[in-house]
Image (cartoon, rainbow, N blue to C red):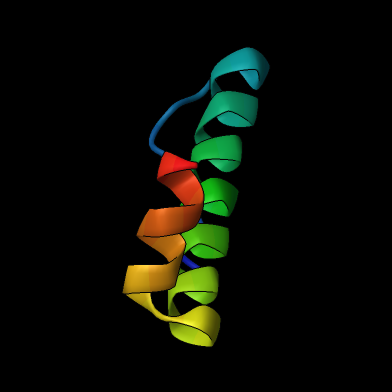
Length: 45
């Protein structure tokens, strides 16, 4: 999915970093599945 290590050290920061990685992964996956134009329209709606 991404890096196998975290840039941050404390548990709270690691959770935040992981949440960002997962969000980015899911957005890229949606863009691949439905296309960037439909994704942008859905975000604006």
